[in-house]
Amino acid sequence: MTHRVVVLALDGAIPFELGIPGRIFGAALGPGGEPLYDVVTCTLDGAPVRTAADFAISVDHDATALAGADTVVIPPFAFADPPPPDALARVRPGTRIMSICTGAFVLAAAGLLDGRPATTHWGEAGRFQKLFPKVRLDPEVLFVDDGDLLTSAGAAAGVDLCLHVVRRDHGSEVANRAARRCVVPPWRDGGQAQYIERPVPEPHDTGTAPVRAWALERLDRPLSLTDLATEAGMSVRTLSRRFQEEVGMSPGRWLTHQRVERARHLLEASDLPVDRIARLAGFGTAVSLRQHLHAALGVSPITYRRAFHPQEPAPMSSARPGGR
Image (cartoon, rainbow, N blue to C red; front, side, top):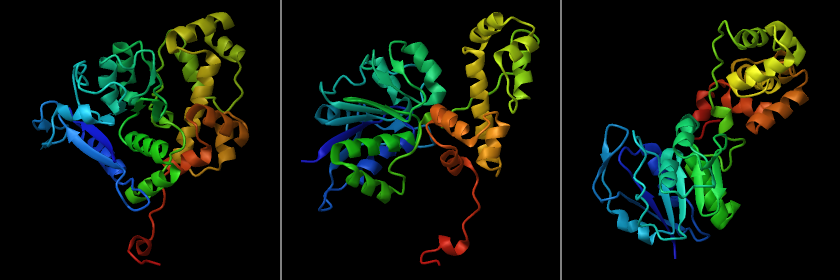
């Protein structure tokens, strides 16, 4: 028997993520080409729902379909308030439940994630943590597998999660074939951290902002805690306390973070060799840069550059079928 996946489309559904489960699970085939998953989509009442785009969608099933699911998927949706806590009331106990992006809000509203690890889109992490402080949220990973509850980060991270589930259910060979059919990588290096925007605070005349602005202009130089304290006109102890109060981390951790950000920018926007970028960012050596970037983002400098550095367009002949 095929494994039944039921996708719950809520009002304001985001079309791209709504289609991910059907596309990925539908591409997972057995050795004889037989489908391994049966994917159906439902709404709470069976009526059409609006999407976040300029069209609505209609479905063939209402929430009674949830009771027959082996796996339930909650894609993201646009909303102003937390979702109703009874949205999953028809799901049988023990059913595997997955969320994509802000679909995690539905799981959390139902109390399913209390005390458990989870993730969601990094841009919604702050609101999520305020609404659901009992959830052990990790906003830097692509997905979290906690057995019967699985959550993913935003948008394309739903592809990563669905491929992971196929891999868990049927092994790497089936998952890799499904990825090839969908023309996506079977596994992405790193986590959501490499996509998070972290704007640098604007300098002000009080607190540690002036010394932070001063340090940002000298990231390529050795900077000790004493150097920072002297420039700020504070004791080391006072500077450390102010940093913790104002930016939520120690001066040393903040400095390392800014150096990683500088390296990210140079990897994205320049063709400089990695060892040169390491020196400009204040890491000194390519080995040190590689260690710090992997600790922060889970990827190497080369992998990060390959993902984010603009590439030269391919010759037209290589883009045509049968091109040489």
